[in-house]
Image: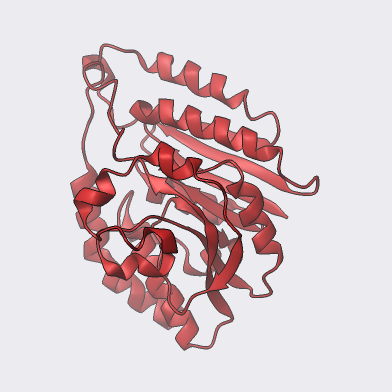
Length: 291
């Protein structure tokens, strides 16, 4: 089984990316010999005005390829983009979906904290599934509203469901908790955050695709969730599972940018999101017609 870990990376995220790669390196010692992993990451250099920045792009390029040396346990696709081909995670995921020959694609955002053992558990879980189209999501802590409770670990239900509590979670504490009894449980809806260590069958993502009109960033997880609902209504063999007993979490508490005063960032996130939101309805209708 081949699992492709897909990551979109901005220069100021490179330190946390390095930490993730070290976690994955630790996780590699839990894998079976037949498990093959590809780390597919693009360093997006397009959203920095390098002429007005105090640090040169070469600093980040050099560090990027130094980090790649830690990945001596797997195949790598470490890509530099400064030609405006990859401006956001949608661009990265679109390219990876369309070119992939892997069995599974795993989306990973650079701000996600996870225990190293998770890679073994999620790959082994995929081996147990007979469905053609599937998603496996780890559990997370209590989110900002109850709609996320379906992928929330039971021990976090005593925590209030609000943004303040979520933002103040210590991610180091969360992932240092001992791994509990692991269960792979089907759920009766589709609910996930895009890059929260979700594993998708490549066949599923090739069916939904990542339409060009959604642009570089925004609503990609919502689009796939809606497509999955439609496929289920049309009697496709599709299911989401939750990997109970193992938790991932976004790093809000320690999410600072040490390069803030040294890089002149170009913020197009709102513009990209507006583009995606304005086109999602048409793409959903196109998907309905396609299937």
